[in-house]
Image (cartoon, rainbow, N blue to C red; front, side, top):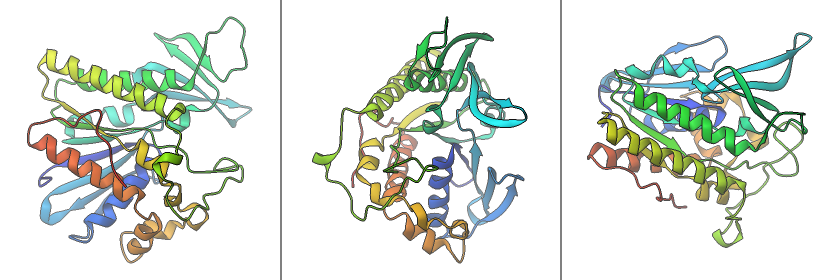
Length: 298
């Protein structure tokens, strides 16, 4: 299925977790060569020699162009987002890819100033800034995916399958990841106990709507690019026990010999996502599309 192909995971740390778990799965068949790593360990590339298959991770926390506002030379955590410009870190590589798995979401819950055509059009979490339209995070997320899909559809030298992974809820409780939050659950939640009306479902709905819009535009243009959905939101809401939390150890992301430890520490959560992606990709290779209403299962 992937012999002679190139696949990239594009997104934030969740995309990194996803690709590293996939590496552990694939390494049971063949140990890949790490052929590239940048100085910040955010862009990495592996090559499976016997399958002529290249796998990579491309760090792009917003998918679109973003500039952090600096205060006296110090990071502020506040960003200018350009809703109509894609992040070139992945855009420049796109024509070389056969598969792109894209995801984003968690970086949008902070103060952001939204720009279009180089003009300020609104903001998120900006405390009622005068003369500025207030938007929810979901608006910025929707626009990021729209711009991403529009760019893919307009790529003249592209012929790839794009899989969008739906929003994965945060698993930290009693605080955020950097404010004392923990992931101490030891068993999955039942489906009847999870909230199906929260903001996570609003984000998922926006993502699916933008994906369907992209499909329709692509069909009208007669594009070679195909789109599919890896719908993991429901499953991930049930798997708060799947986050390594305080058990995270950078040694665990090595392919060998620590792969089994890393693979185990994520229980079934990321493995579910990879299985869902495999089923989606298999279906697309056969010429079909993944249903935007499809679900993963636990």
